[in-house]
Picture 1: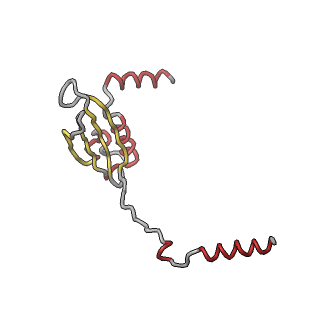
Picture 2 (picture 1 turned 45 degrees about the horizontal axis):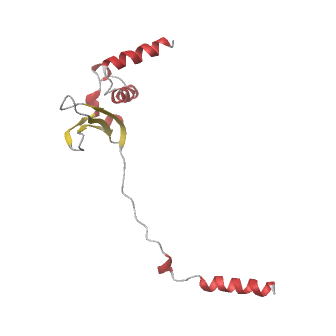
Picture 3 (picture 1 turned 180 degrees about the horizontal axis):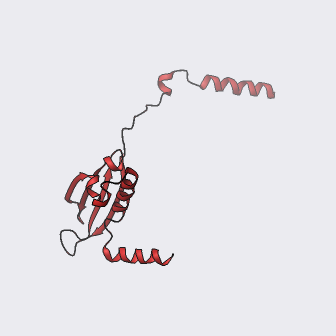
Length: 134
């Protein structure tokens, strides 16, 4: 009896499987989305008006930090872009780093972007805190 039930179950399984490849294929879509954003810094602070809360961002995009394009963008409270400027990332390098090797330049660019929206008061507090731990 068990043998008959097993054979019937197997027969049903094989007969219910479709051999038509057309109906079993799942259409595949190719994604072309690429993100070449390397580093970004964002802050909500006034830009055009003193009491506004505009979103300012500095983004480096490209193959590498030294070949990247920097984009400074400001979006107002309503989501409207009110300012956008692009320039080579190397324009962010301070004069002392212009002759440095590529590793130092990349590290400097990371620091510049990371601290782009940090005001001088906050930078002083951070530096005092880091020296206090010595």
